[in-house]
Length: 382
Image (cartoon, rainbow, N blue to C red; front, side):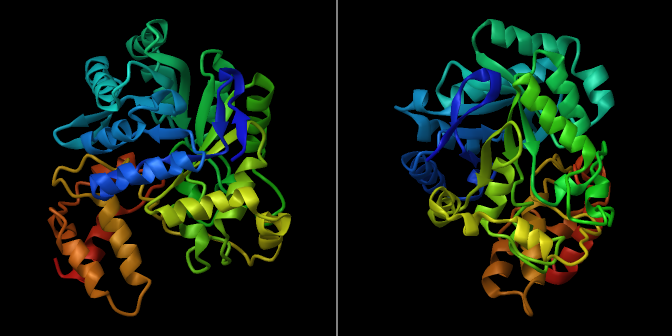
């Protein structure tokens, strides 16, 4: 494993990290073992944006006895209310959630205290300043967070954060598809036929953001490097061709200021597939030839990356999981019995959706969730 300096934090992080959002999908013992396996292979940074007790308990158990060997991105503003994820700037709720994070991770500090999920300029201008930011600063003064970070999908916000002076690192979404797109507050254009007419370069605003972060010594960690796994399949990739994990990882690591690519894992085999990057040849890492041979590209219609920001749902539907099962089902001629059983075992089903569309206002990628719930109910019959 190679390690890189994460900007002005001076933390030496593994260039391949662990995005933990799928930990809760598996039995607790399996997920604890998966994190320990990743650590044994050299991974030392994990993102914990998830507020649910199970995910936090898993990470805490996996780090027990070796806490100082891990760097944790813990998010301030990602809360668990009424059994669901809720993003908030309410300080009282943030305090409860952060204290819960420390308790479940069995630690008294978080290495990277993240200002959670800022994509809109009005959020940055009106909601982050004031009591919320005062609380983040208080946590740092108390030593409960060692460094201040921020997570965003919007390069305009990333630039503002880099210029702020108090944000030391940024969690940003990077992959070959997103980088071709102009900035937007709602990210809706990422999936609406508005890619550049050629595949030659990154959108200028993103180029500026990468360079600014490098100049200001603001390190980047990467989320969504595989676009929810869609880049691995030619029929789902916006380029019409498939990439490998090594190609996606190399793409991210060649961008200025990027220190670590946080991949999502379900199994040890997926960890191994990502870590194969460390011994891959130049030819195996080469993403440029794939892009050069790609047909005209599109990511039309708004596609789910299963990030979970759509919650909370008034019907308690696990929207991300329902979407994932639907996508897996429609890729096959018939719905496999095992997949149907998995869907039916969910506590709440797509047919319970009341089409309030609150989830759609929170989706970073403007997925038409209510419409997908209707299609899913028709497909699975419930």
